Structures are given as C-alpha cells and as structure tokens.
Image 1 (cartoon, rainbow, N blue to C red):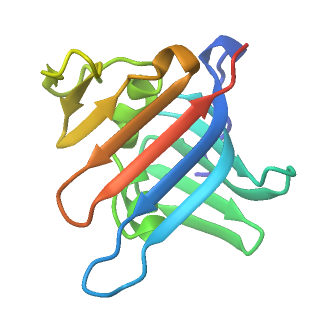
Image 2 (cartoon, rainbow, N blue to C red):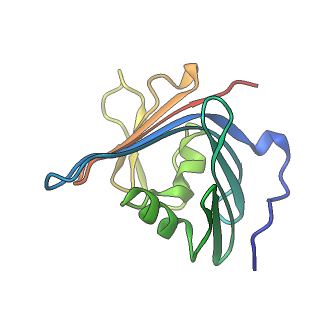
Length: 160
C-alpha cells in the first residue's frame, strides 16, 4: 500500500530550514543534508517534503503504519519504517517520532526526559539527545547526540 498524504490542517504543519550532520567515524567523510522542509502529520502518518532553497524537490517521504515511501528524482524506494529510512539516507537513524515534539519545543511523551541543568541554556535531554531551546523564541531548535557518531539536527521554523 502506498501511503497517502495525511489529512491534517495547516496548523499541524511545520516548515522551515533543516540541517542534519552525521560526523565522520574511522576516517569516513561526514554526511550532511540541508534543505527547506514542509512537515505534516505525526509519527504515525505524515508527509515530509525536502527542497533546495530555490524550490527544486530533493525528496518526499510519505508514511503510514508499516509503510514508508521515499520519492526522489531518481525514483521511489519503500521502507518498513521511518528509522529504516533515516538510517539508509544518513547512515544513522534519527528519532523521528520525537522530532515532531522537539520542533515544537517540548519533550516527546513517549520516553522519559530530563530538564537541562544549566538554566542559562533552556532545553532537555531525551533518548540520548540534548535538545537546545536557547533560541526557541527565534524559532530555532537544535538537537545533538554525543555518542559516536555524533549527530546534530538544526531547524529554523518559518513563522506563520
């Protein structure tokens, strides 16, 4: 079954600019992706469009329970879940289910979290990631996983 676009209102959408970097390990080159994004739905069913700053489509991912379809200019690829998709594209899986909440400045309710001890830098730790909300008022969110390979995700959301 091909996942269809989720039925969500525009208030459920997130858009902006996204940068993901997976640092090098054992001399392998670092991997990174930067794109504008439009994210709709949730971890269960959703749609993610990635484009260049000039609007050329880099990729579209659509997902529903048990099925993920990635469409790029080179064709379509199916994955059983979002973790498999991010592992294939980046070499590491990202906590996509948690990202929906992190981009909204809150911990994901599906796992324990701790508030950052440094009150000068607001944020929290969850799933082995440090989520930095120091610039959340400016629509920036950054998340970093320190275990090797180090992975960082930075997003700047568009304001409505």
